[in-house]
Amino acid sequence: MFTSLNTLQKIILILFSFCIVLNIYYEWDTKDEQVILNPNPWESFPKEENYQWKEAGLFELRAYQTKVIPFHKNNFWGLTYDISCEIRYKQENHIEIKDSIHTFYTNQTLSEAQSIQNAKHITSDNDSLIFSEYTFGENISFYLLKKNKGYYRSNSGLNIQFHSSYFTPKYIKLNLDSNNAILVKTNPLLVFNSNILSTSLFALGTVILLVLAVYGGYESFVFLIVLLFYFAFSDYYIWFYFVFLFCLSIFFKIKMRAITVNWLALPFVYWRTLPFVFIGLVLFIHKWEKTFSWGGLLFESLLALFYMFITWLIFYVSSTSIYTLYIYIFFKEKDVEQLKYIDFTSNMDPGNSGRRIPYYAGTIKLKDKVIPNVMMNFSDYFKAKKNKEIKISKYKTDNKGNYIFY
Image 1: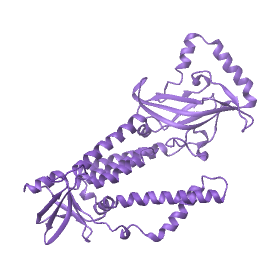
Image 2 (image 1 turned 90 degrees about the vertical axis):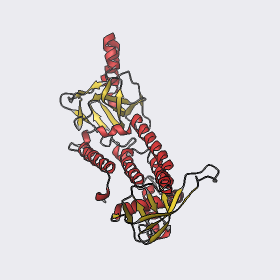
Image 3 (image 1 turned 60 degrees about the horizontal axis):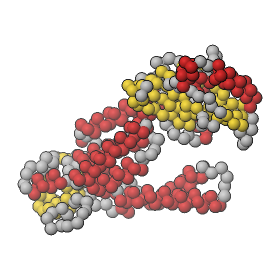
Image 4 (image 1 turned 120 degrees about the vertical axis):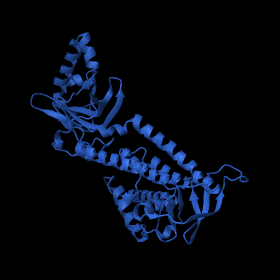
Protein backbone atom coordinates (compact mmCIF):
# COMPACT_ATOMS: atom_id res chain seq x y z
CA MET A 1 0.00 0.00 0.00
CA PHE A 2 2.68 2.52 1.02
CA THR A 3 4.37 2.33 -2.38
CA SER A 4 1.18 3.61 -4.01
CA LEU A 5 0.71 6.61 -1.71
CA ASN A 6 0.87 10.03 -3.32
CA THR A 7 2.24 13.18 -1.69
CA LEU A 8 -1.12 14.30 -0.29
CA GLN A 9 -1.74 10.93 1.34
CA LYS A 10 1.73 10.92 2.89
CA ILE A 11 1.15 14.40 4.31
CA ILE A 12 -2.18 13.29 5.82
CA LEU A 13 -0.57 10.25 7.43
CA ILE A 14 2.33 12.32 8.78
CA LEU A 15 -0.08 14.87 10.33
CA PHE A 16 -2.23 12.06 11.70
CA SER A 17 0.81 10.37 13.27
CA PHE A 18 2.02 13.66 14.74
CA CYS A 19 -1.40 14.33 16.31
CA ILE A 20 -1.55 10.79 17.74
CA VAL A 21 1.87 11.16 19.38
CA LEU A 22 0.93 14.62 20.70
CA ASN A 23 -2.36 13.31 22.07
CA ILE A 24 -0.67 10.36 23.78
CA TYR A 25 1.76 12.77 25.45
CA TYR A 26 -1.02 15.02 26.79
CA GLU A 27 -3.46 12.24 27.70
CA TRP A 28 -1.01 9.87 29.41
CA ASP A 29 -1.49 10.69 33.07
CA THR A 30 1.59 10.91 35.24
CA LYS A 31 -0.30 12.43 38.15
CA ASP A 32 -2.80 11.05 40.63
CA GLU A 33 -6.24 11.34 39.00
CA GLN A 34 -7.67 12.30 42.39
CA VAL A 35 -6.16 15.76 41.97
CA ILE A 36 -6.92 16.20 38.26
CA LEU A 37 -10.05 18.31 37.80
CA ASN A 38 -10.75 17.17 34.22
CA PRO A 39 -9.24 13.68 33.70
CA ASN A 40 -11.30 13.15 30.50
CA PRO A 41 -11.12 16.48 28.64
CA TRP A 42 -12.16 15.00 25.27
CA GLU A 43 -15.63 14.14 26.61
CA SER A 44 -18.08 17.05 26.54
CA PHE A 45 -20.34 15.34 29.05
CA PRO A 46 -18.39 12.53 30.73
CA LYS A 47 -19.97 9.41 32.12
CA GLU A 48 -20.80 9.45 35.82
CA GLU A 49 -17.80 7.30 36.75
CA ASN A 50 -15.51 9.82 34.98
CA TYR A 51 -17.30 12.79 36.45
CA GLN A 52 -16.26 12.84 40.09
CA TRP A 53 -16.19 15.61 42.66
CA LYS A 54 -12.73 16.96 43.54
CA GLU A 55 -11.96 18.73 46.78
CA ALA A 56 -10.89 22.34 46.30
CA GLY A 57 -10.38 23.78 49.75
CA LEU A 58 -13.79 24.43 51.30
CA PHE A 59 -15.42 23.78 47.91
CA GLU A 60 -15.87 20.68 45.75
CA LEU A 61 -15.70 20.83 41.94
CA ARG A 62 -16.36 18.49 39.05
CA ALA A 63 -15.65 19.44 35.45
CA TYR A 64 -18.11 18.42 32.75
CA GLN A 65 -16.62 20.23 29.75
CA THR A 66 -13.19 21.39 28.64
CA LYS A 67 -13.15 23.88 25.78
CA VAL A 68 -10.11 25.18 23.97
CA ILE A 69 -10.92 28.43 22.20
CA PRO A 70 -8.71 29.96 19.48
CA PHE A 71 -8.63 33.67 18.57
CA HIS A 72 -9.98 34.86 21.93
CA LYS A 73 -10.19 38.65 22.09
CA ASN A 74 -7.84 38.73 25.08
CA ASN A 75 -5.47 36.08 23.70
CA PHE A 76 -5.73 36.15 19.92
CA TRP A 77 -2.35 34.52 19.23
CA GLY A 78 -2.72 31.67 21.70
CA LEU A 79 -5.29 29.28 23.14
CA THR A 80 -7.85 29.94 25.86
CA TYR A 81 -8.93 27.06 28.10
CA ASP A 82 -12.45 27.23 29.50
CA ILE A 83 -13.26 24.56 32.10
CA SER A 84 -16.99 24.36 32.93
CA CYS A 85 -17.53 23.01 36.43
CA GLU A 86 -20.25 22.28 38.90
CA ILE A 87 -19.46 23.62 42.35
CA ARG A 88 -20.76 22.77 45.81
CA TYR A 89 -19.75 22.84 49.44
CA LYS A 90 -20.74 21.02 52.60
CA GLN A 91 -23.51 22.45 54.72
CA GLU A 92 -21.16 22.65 57.71
CA ASN A 93 -19.05 25.20 55.81
CA HIS A 94 -22.02 27.35 54.78
CA ILE A 95 -21.65 30.09 57.37
CA GLU A 96 -17.90 30.45 56.87
CA ILE A 97 -18.11 30.59 53.06
CA LYS A 98 -21.17 32.86 53.01
CA ASP A 99 -19.57 35.36 55.37
CA SER A 100 -16.27 35.23 53.49
CA ILE A 101 -17.86 35.92 50.11
CA HIS A 102 -20.19 38.60 51.51
CA THR A 103 -17.33 40.39 53.24
CA PHE A 104 -15.23 40.26 50.14
CA TYR A 105 -17.88 41.71 47.86
CA THR A 106 -18.97 44.45 50.23
CA ASN A 107 -15.47 45.68 51.06
CA GLN A 108 -13.99 45.79 47.57
CA THR A 109 -12.97 48.98 45.81
CA LEU A 110 -13.91 49.82 42.22
CA SER A 111 -10.54 48.63 40.92
CA GLU A 112 -10.91 45.41 42.92
CA ALA A 113 -14.38 44.87 41.46
CA GLN A 114 -13.02 45.26 37.95
CA SER A 115 -10.20 42.84 38.70
CA ILE A 116 -12.75 40.32 39.95
CA GLN A 117 -14.68 40.50 36.69
CA ASN A 118 -11.46 39.73 34.82
CA ALA A 119 -10.10 37.27 37.36
CA LYS A 120 -10.98 34.19 35.31
CA HIS A 121 -9.05 35.55 32.32
CA ILE A 122 -5.78 34.30 33.75
CA THR A 123 -2.60 34.14 31.72
CA SER A 124 -0.85 30.90 32.63
CA ASP A 125 2.65 31.73 31.34
CA ASN A 126 3.60 28.19 32.33
CA ASP A 127 3.36 29.16 36.00
CA SER A 128 1.13 27.91 38.79
CA LEU A 129 -2.16 29.76 39.22
CA ILE A 130 -4.12 30.63 42.34
CA PHE A 131 -7.67 29.37 42.81
CA SER A 132 -10.03 31.01 45.31
CA GLU A 133 -13.48 32.55 45.44
CA TYR A 134 -11.92 35.43 43.48
CA THR A 135 -11.97 33.13 40.44
CA PHE A 136 -15.76 33.23 40.33
CA GLY A 137 -15.78 36.56 38.57
CA GLU A 138 -19.12 37.43 40.16
CA ASN A 139 -21.12 36.70 43.29
CA ILE A 140 -22.47 33.17 42.73
CA SER A 141 -25.54 32.13 44.69
CA PHE A 142 -25.94 28.67 46.21
CA TYR A 143 -28.99 26.62 47.16
CA LEU A 144 -29.42 23.77 49.60
CA LEU A 145 -29.71 20.40 47.88
CA LYS A 146 -32.75 18.30 48.67
CA LYS A 147 -31.72 14.98 47.12
CA ASN A 148 -28.10 15.05 48.26
CA LYS A 149 -28.52 16.32 51.80
CA GLY A 150 -25.70 18.10 53.52
CA TYR A 151 -24.51 20.16 50.52
CA TYR A 152 -25.07 23.60 49.06
CA ARG A 153 -24.76 23.81 45.28
CA SER A 154 -24.32 26.68 42.84
CA ASN A 155 -27.08 27.66 40.42
CA SER A 156 -24.71 28.80 37.69
CA GLY A 157 -21.62 26.68 38.24
CA LEU A 158 -18.12 27.94 37.67
CA ASN A 159 -15.93 28.59 34.64
CA ILE A 160 -12.21 28.44 35.20
CA GLN A 161 -10.70 30.19 32.22
CA PHE A 162 -7.06 30.88 31.49
CA HIS A 163 -4.97 31.91 28.50
CA SER A 164 -1.93 30.06 27.27
CA SER A 165 0.37 29.67 24.31
CA TYR A 166 -0.35 26.93 21.76
CA PHE A 167 1.68 24.34 23.64
CA THR A 168 1.40 24.26 27.42
CA PRO A 169 2.67 21.92 30.12
CA LYS A 170 0.52 18.80 30.50
CA TYR A 171 -1.07 20.24 33.65
CA ILE A 172 -1.80 23.73 34.91
CA LYS A 173 -1.60 23.87 38.68
CA LEU A 174 -4.29 25.75 40.61
CA ASN A 175 -3.06 26.43 44.15
CA LEU A 176 -5.77 26.22 46.81
CA ASP A 177 -3.47 27.16 49.66
CA SER A 178 0.15 26.67 50.63
CA ASN A 179 -0.29 22.88 50.91
CA ASN A 180 -3.06 21.85 48.50
CA ALA A 181 -3.68 22.20 44.78
CA ILE A 182 -5.71 20.75 41.92
CA LEU A 183 -4.50 20.19 38.36
CA VAL A 184 -6.18 21.08 35.06
CA LYS A 185 -5.24 18.78 32.19
CA THR A 186 -4.43 20.56 28.93
CA ASN A 187 -4.35 19.36 25.32
CA PRO A 188 -3.90 21.74 22.34
CA LEU A 189 -5.64 19.23 20.03
CA LEU A 190 -8.92 20.05 21.78
CA VAL A 191 -8.92 23.22 19.68
CA PHE A 192 -10.36 21.09 16.85
CA ASN A 193 -13.53 20.67 18.94
CA SER A 194 -14.06 24.42 19.10
CA ASN A 195 -17.05 25.76 17.19
CA ILE A 196 -14.83 27.84 14.91
CA LEU A 197 -12.61 25.01 13.69
CA SER A 198 -15.15 22.15 13.73
CA THR A 199 -17.62 24.23 11.67
CA SER A 200 -14.87 25.31 9.28
CA LEU A 201 -13.64 21.73 8.81
CA PHE A 202 -17.18 20.50 8.20
CA ALA A 203 -17.84 23.25 5.64
CA LEU A 204 -14.51 22.54 3.90
CA GLY A 205 -15.28 18.81 3.78
CA THR A 206 -18.71 19.48 2.30
CA VAL A 207 -17.30 21.76 -0.41
CA ILE A 208 -14.61 19.22 -1.37
CA LEU A 209 -17.26 16.48 -1.51
CA LEU A 210 -19.36 18.56 -3.91
CA VAL A 211 -16.27 18.95 -6.10
CA LEU A 212 -15.79 15.17 -5.96
CA ALA A 213 -19.41 14.60 -7.02
CA VAL A 214 -19.04 16.91 -10.01
CA TYR A 215 -15.68 15.33 -10.77
CA GLY A 216 -17.50 12.07 -11.34
CA GLY A 217 -17.28 10.35 -7.97
CA TYR A 218 -20.93 10.49 -6.95
CA GLU A 219 -20.85 7.00 -5.40
CA SER A 220 -17.93 8.05 -3.22
CA PHE A 221 -19.79 11.26 -2.41
CA VAL A 222 -22.70 9.26 -0.94
CA PHE A 223 -20.32 7.20 1.21
CA LEU A 224 -18.24 10.13 2.47
CA ILE A 225 -21.15 12.51 3.14
CA VAL A 226 -22.61 9.88 5.48
CA LEU A 227 -19.23 9.56 7.19
CA LEU A 228 -18.91 13.33 7.51
CA PHE A 229 -22.40 13.85 8.96
CA TYR A 230 -22.34 10.77 11.18
CA PHE A 231 -19.27 11.89 13.11
CA ALA A 232 -19.84 15.65 12.86
CA PHE A 233 -21.05 15.95 16.45
CA SER A 234 -18.62 13.50 18.01
CA ASP A 235 -16.18 14.65 20.70
CA TYR A 236 -13.52 12.79 18.70
CA TYR A 237 -14.44 14.44 15.40
CA ILE A 238 -10.86 15.34 14.43
CA TRP A 239 -9.77 11.67 14.38
CA PHE A 240 -12.64 10.66 12.10
CA TYR A 241 -11.89 13.71 9.96
CA PHE A 242 -8.39 12.36 9.26
CA VAL A 243 -9.97 9.08 8.09
CA PHE A 244 -12.37 11.12 5.97
CA LEU A 245 -9.51 13.09 4.38
CA PHE A 246 -7.50 9.95 3.65
CA CYS A 247 -10.47 8.27 1.95
CA LEU A 248 -11.16 11.47 0.04
CA SER A 249 -7.58 11.60 -1.24
CA ILE A 250 -7.90 8.02 -2.54
CA PHE A 251 -11.12 8.73 -4.45
CA PHE A 252 -9.64 11.84 -6.03
CA LYS A 253 -6.56 9.84 -7.02
CA ILE A 254 -8.53 7.04 -8.72
CA LYS A 255 -9.41 8.08 -12.26
CA MET A 256 -11.32 4.99 -13.35
CA ARG A 257 -12.84 2.01 -11.61
CA ALA A 258 -14.95 -1.00 -12.46
CA ILE A 259 -16.43 -2.40 -9.25
CA THR A 260 -19.34 -4.82 -9.00
CA VAL A 261 -20.19 -5.85 -5.44
CA ASN A 262 -22.32 -8.81 -4.49
CA TRP A 263 -23.31 -7.60 -1.03
CA LEU A 264 -24.00 -11.04 0.43
CA ALA A 265 -20.63 -12.34 -0.69
CA LEU A 266 -18.44 -9.52 0.62
CA PRO A 267 -15.24 -11.05 2.04
CA PHE A 268 -15.34 -9.02 5.27
CA VAL A 269 -18.97 -9.81 6.17
CA TYR A 270 -19.80 -13.06 7.95
CA TRP A 271 -23.54 -13.18 8.46
CA ARG A 272 -23.48 -15.85 11.15
CA THR A 273 -21.89 -13.34 13.51
CA LEU A 274 -24.94 -11.04 13.41
CA PRO A 275 -26.70 -12.71 16.39
CA PHE A 276 -23.56 -12.14 18.46
CA VAL A 277 -23.38 -8.54 17.26
CA PHE A 278 -27.04 -8.09 18.26
CA ILE A 279 -26.47 -9.53 21.74
CA GLY A 280 -23.35 -7.40 22.17
CA LEU A 281 -25.27 -4.24 21.22
CA VAL A 282 -28.08 -5.05 23.66
CA LEU A 283 -25.57 -5.57 26.48
CA PHE A 284 -23.78 -2.34 25.53
CA ILE A 285 -27.02 -0.36 25.56
CA HIS A 286 -28.20 -2.09 28.76
CA LYS A 287 -25.27 -0.75 30.76
CA TRP A 288 -26.94 2.67 30.55
CA GLU A 289 -29.81 1.29 32.64
CA LYS A 290 -29.45 0.88 36.39
CA THR A 291 -32.28 -1.63 36.84
CA PHE A 292 -33.58 -4.53 34.74
CA SER A 293 -37.09 -4.64 33.30
CA TRP A 294 -38.70 -6.58 30.47
CA GLY A 295 -39.98 -3.35 28.96
CA GLY A 296 -36.47 -1.90 29.08
CA LEU A 297 -35.06 -5.07 27.50
CA LEU A 298 -37.60 -4.80 24.65
CA PHE A 299 -36.67 -1.15 24.07
CA GLU A 300 -32.95 -2.01 24.12
CA SER A 301 -33.52 -4.84 21.62
CA LEU A 302 -35.44 -2.56 19.25
CA LEU A 303 -32.74 0.09 19.58
CA ALA A 304 -30.04 -2.51 18.79
CA LEU A 305 -32.00 -3.62 15.69
CA PHE A 306 -32.31 0.00 14.59
CA TYR A 307 -28.54 0.54 14.94
CA MET A 308 -27.86 -2.66 12.98
CA PHE A 309 -30.28 -1.64 10.22
CA ILE A 310 -28.77 1.85 9.88
CA THR A 311 -25.25 0.36 9.78
CA TRP A 312 -26.32 -2.21 7.18
CA LEU A 313 -27.99 0.50 5.08
CA ILE A 314 -24.86 2.65 5.14
CA PHE A 315 -22.68 -0.29 4.11
CA TYR A 316 -25.17 -1.41 1.47
CA VAL A 317 -25.39 2.02 -0.18
CA SER A 318 -21.65 2.54 0.15
CA SER A 319 -20.53 -1.02 -0.68
CA THR A 320 -18.93 -0.04 -4.00
CA SER A 321 -16.89 2.73 -2.38
CA ILE A 322 -15.90 0.53 0.55
CA TYR A 323 -14.76 -2.23 -1.79
CA THR A 324 -12.78 0.32 -3.80
CA LEU A 325 -10.89 1.27 -0.63
CA TYR A 326 -10.42 -2.42 0.14
CA ILE A 327 -8.78 -3.05 -3.24
CA TYR A 328 -6.62 0.08 -2.99
CA ILE A 329 -5.31 -0.82 0.47
CA PHE A 330 -4.86 -4.59 0.27
CA PHE A 331 -3.98 -5.44 -3.35
CA LYS A 332 -0.73 -5.14 -5.22
CA GLU A 333 -0.10 -2.30 -7.63
CA LYS A 334 0.50 -3.20 -11.29
CA ASP A 335 1.67 -1.27 -14.34
CA VAL A 336 -0.86 -0.46 -17.04
CA GLU A 337 0.00 -1.95 -20.44
CA GLN A 338 -1.95 -1.82 -23.71
CA LEU A 339 -4.96 0.14 -22.45
CA LYS A 340 -7.52 0.91 -25.16
CA TYR A 341 -10.89 2.76 -25.00
CA ILE A 342 -13.70 1.08 -26.92
CA ASP A 343 -17.00 2.75 -26.04
CA PHE A 344 -18.38 5.64 -23.93
CA THR A 345 -21.66 6.51 -22.23
CA SER A 346 -22.89 9.39 -20.05
CA ASN A 347 -26.24 10.70 -18.86
CA MET A 348 -24.88 14.19 -19.53
CA ASP A 349 -24.55 13.62 -23.27
CA PRO A 350 -26.79 15.65 -25.65
CA GLY A 351 -30.26 14.17 -25.82
CA ASN A 352 -30.46 13.28 -22.12
CA SER A 353 -32.73 15.68 -20.26
CA GLY A 354 -33.56 16.30 -16.60
CA ARG A 355 -31.48 17.01 -13.55
CA ARG A 356 -29.40 14.08 -12.36
CA ILE A 357 -26.09 13.18 -10.77
CA PRO A 358 -23.37 13.11 -13.47
CA TYR A 359 -22.49 9.66 -14.74
CA TYR A 360 -19.49 8.98 -16.97
CA ALA A 361 -18.47 5.48 -18.04
CA GLY A 362 -16.75 3.59 -20.77
CA THR A 363 -15.67 0.16 -22.00
CA ILE A 364 -11.94 -0.47 -22.09
CA LYS A 365 -9.59 -3.21 -23.19
CA LEU A 366 -6.68 -4.04 -20.86
CA LYS A 367 -4.33 -6.36 -22.72
CA ASP A 368 -6.72 -9.15 -23.80
CA LYS A 369 -9.49 -8.40 -21.25
CA VAL A 370 -12.53 -6.31 -22.13
CA ILE A 371 -13.85 -4.45 -19.07
CA PRO A 372 -17.33 -2.92 -19.44
CA ASN A 373 -18.95 -0.14 -17.38
CA VAL A 374 -15.74 1.48 -16.19
CA MET A 375 -16.60 4.59 -14.16
CA MET A 376 -14.61 7.67 -15.20
CA ASN A 377 -14.28 11.25 -14.01
CA PHE A 378 -15.58 13.86 -16.43
CA SER A 379 -12.13 15.24 -17.34
CA ASP A 380 -10.73 11.89 -18.47
CA TYR A 381 -14.04 10.97 -20.08
CA PHE A 382 -13.90 13.91 -22.49
CA LYS A 383 -10.18 13.47 -23.08
CA ALA A 384 -10.69 9.82 -23.99
CA LYS A 385 -13.54 10.66 -26.37
CA LYS A 386 -11.28 13.14 -28.14
CA ASN A 387 -8.38 10.65 -28.23
CA LYS A 388 -6.26 12.85 -25.97
CA GLU A 389 -3.63 11.38 -23.69
CA ILE A 390 -4.77 10.33 -20.22
CA LYS A 391 -2.11 9.85 -17.58
CA ILE A 392 -3.06 6.45 -16.16
CA SER A 393 -0.07 4.27 -15.36
CA LYS A 394 -1.13 1.99 -12.49
CA TYR A 395 -4.00 -0.29 -11.61
CA LYS A 396 -5.08 -2.78 -8.95
CA THR A 397 -7.42 -5.74 -9.22
CA ASP A 398 -8.82 -8.44 -6.95
CA ASN A 399 -8.57 -10.90 -9.90
CA LYS A 400 -12.35 -11.30 -9.75
CA GLY A 401 -13.25 -8.71 -12.38
CA ASN A 402 -12.93 -5.58 -10.20
CA TYR A 403 -10.39 -2.88 -11.15
CA ILE A 404 -9.22 0.56 -10.10
CA PHE A 405 -6.99 2.73 -12.31
CA TYR A 406 -4.89 5.75 -11.40
